[in-house]
Structure formats: structure tokens, C-alpha cells
Image (cartoon, rainbow, N blue to C red; front, top):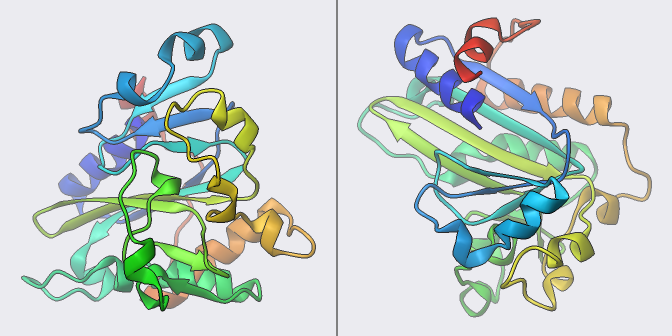
Length: 231
């Protein structure tokens, strides 16, 4: 999370956009900058079991990270086709995720498009359990989560694409996990007949971002600058 923050700070200095894909060394939880983690999660148990818990610089609820593809990007409004002085919503910014899911043969839509959205719309301390306008759903079930931070003409966003979710594990740590969470949340493992290798999924995600916003990428082998700052 600190590396994400340093990438955003770097963008504010040099205006060079960065798209990052990463994974987690062990099951972890992140929580929004305005949340009180002690109210929602069993911190003493985390410490004993070695599960990582960390605050994000973005808002939103608690998010479980394990077997997933996690992404982040820092760029300017103009990189995403957002006119100066005009705020374009998640609907536009997240089109690259819609393209990604479609490339897998899935049919994603925004929660707002569901016929019963008003009845199913609600906030929750756990990101996966909430349902907001521009959450992405597949077959009526939410997939992944995204959070954003803006400063002047700069945009930072990070989010997750779950390959699978171990709800029994999550249930042991999150105090307010709804008992029917599996009926409203999904993962790629549940939606695809055969799970696509991670490397291919990551390549599809990169291509989807590039095609959506007309961007050419230059790969950085190591984040030396940011990694040193995040030590």
C-alpha cells in the first residue's frame, strides 16, 4: 500500500503515468483511510496468525486480498479522456475492467444497470458486501472492488480481481460478514469453466487498459525509486 502511495506521489512530481500489477505474499486485509479497523476486524487474532492488515490511502471498506490480481494506476485526467474541470465517474474510468471481463467471455455490467438496483443498493463496512452504482457485477453478483484518490488533475486508482475467495477464512476475522455473502459476490473461478493462467489474465488486463485509453506501455523491470521510499 505504501508503494502505491509513493507511485502516486511520484506522478505528482514527474507526470509520468504508471500502471502496476501485483499480488500478495499471504492472506491480507486492507481498510479505508477513514475506517476504524478495530471495530470491524479481530486484530489480536491477525497478529497471532501472521495475517497482514494495512490501511489504504483511499476510502471504501475492508477488502480481503489473497488469490487475486491486484492493480493500481496513477495518471492524469487527460490520459483517461477526462476533460479538465469535468469529473468523469467510475463508469468511464472502469471501462477497461469491463473490456477485460468481456475478453474472458463474461457479461459484466454496472450495479446501476440491474433492474432491482435500488433494493439491493447499500453500504457496508466490508467492501465485498456493499453494492454501489458503479460496482461491477456478473450474473447479479459483485466481482472485485476499486477505490480512487484524486489530487488536482491527477487520478490514482487501485482495485482487485479475485481469482477465488476463501470465505471460511474471511469469516474467522471479519466481525460483520453477512452469512449469505457467497450469494452476492463472485470470483473468476466461479464464473469461468476453466481458470485462465494468471500470466494470461495479467496480459489481458494490461491490453484492456491500453486499448481502452489508447496508451502505449513501457515496462519497468524494477520499481527502484518507489521501493526505496517505501522501505
